Length: 210
Image (cartoon, rainbow, N blue to C red):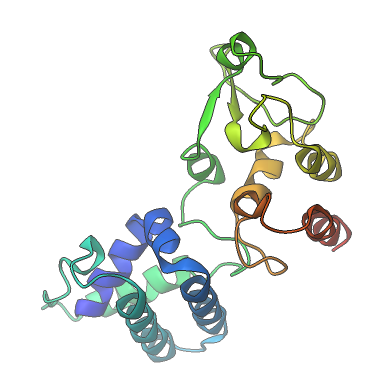
């Protein structure tokens, strides 16, 4: 069935595809994932899958790679069960975006640089509240969204990171910044400078108090 090929391609290339969907497309997809969570049967989940492919068709160019195998059909009826499992795999919390893989893997796809290189350029990666990832080889990597053009940490980032206890859980704090959520509909790091700082802080507060 062609639907499974499209859903499979969506999962494999989740970040690129959801970026292309834009706010409206992501909102529609999020509602369908919510419906997916509530579906009570394989048939119900398959119906939602079909609606997901229609959303992709509305927002992506017709030659997008996600549709590359859309005309291929499975001949094995057992693949219906595989579709059911695949749909279950993407029906997690619709407020937290990221394809089904480790949060660490997803986080590390975003722009970052070594703490040492940032220091050399006059940035401040060691300021309290700045997210740093420390690796077994002794290196440290820092997401770049946290700084202004001068290399100073953004005040709103430090405020939110304090709320998220980034000094204790940098991966958890980064996951919040890079994931869409119920308050903001878009990943918070994309909204820096586009939405009031207090709204980003309020969204972080809602998480910590939730």
